[in-house]
Amino acid sequence: MGALSDITVIDLTASFWASAGTALLADFGADVMQVEEVKGGKKEERLPGWDLLARRNKRRAMVADDAGLRATIEEADVFATDLSFPELEARGLDYDTLAAGKAALIYACASGFGPEGSDRDLPALDELAAARTGMMPVLPQPGEPPVYTGAGQMYSSVMLALGVMLALHHLEETGEGQRVDVSLFSGNMYGASLDIQAYLAIGGERLLHPISRLDAGNPMSGPSYPSSDGRWVTLTMPDTDRYWPRFAPVVGLDPADPRFDTHDKRCEANRLELIQYLDGAFCRQPAVHWKQQIVELGLSGDVIEAYDYPANDEEARRNRYVIDVEGSDSIGLPIYMSETPAAMPAEARAVAR
Image (cartoon, rainbow, N blue to C red; front, side, top):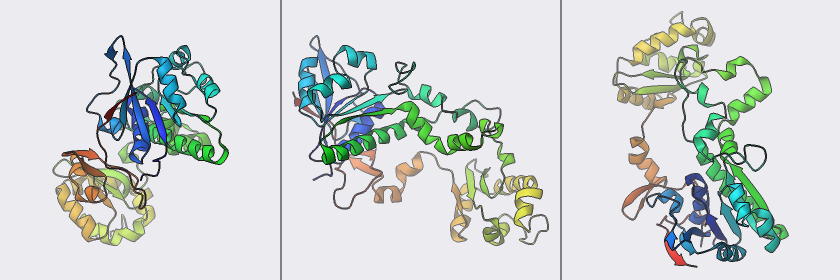
């Protein structure tokens, strides 16, 4: 039995991130029915069939009209949707209408920019939300175009599932349903919250622009260095006094070198000289050499990997972060519960409604 095995969710979502949020609920036992509407005798496909992350562990429910959909929602604990606010209101699927028929309903609404303000009806696209967070211009090196990572929508997915869980707890305690609103804008802002909070606290131009790797305050913590085979090595040793005696010989330096024999010299007076030296040193050996040195000497750093690393990493599989689903590899679950673990993901199953 999953932790949410007594919960029924009606899922009327079309976007990947909102559907992935309800899939998290299904992973832990909720009976999630992904609505597929039939209009004019033709089924509307909202999600690509291959998208296991969004479809897994759900049932597919065919619904012919809005009256049947509303009746189905009244039987459920949770209704999750990412339809636009005007469409929801026009179809009588808005929160006020549905809550009038069932006060205990948890109504989870996924949007692009939130339910209030003039931007509430803008397209719910992650790229648009990410563009407004302030993070994209500071990710690349100076002079390079802004970088869109696509990661913000995954924060929004988790927030949708978390919001529903909090509302379910409140429902159990009080019998009272409520509306849960999550947006791509809020999720992207949460993903960038360390930097946004720093700007809110101290402001200043420095936080508004990308920082060159040559301007790093500590050559041994944060900067990445290219190896001879084109891969990059990142160092994470903020306490340079602790690591310097072991690190210096690895890159061909005497720990007593008067240019770098104190933390202040390494990170202030001769900071740029050390960065330039490390650039040259790391280029002399391939990434596997540096990985071996880091591990054997107990240093802090790693090789920056591509997607093939987690896809083939034995540790990722041992911890269920990559799993086998019906003969194919899939991303696993980021949460493990000893007594009520997530179900092994499965393709969505059709059910007549």
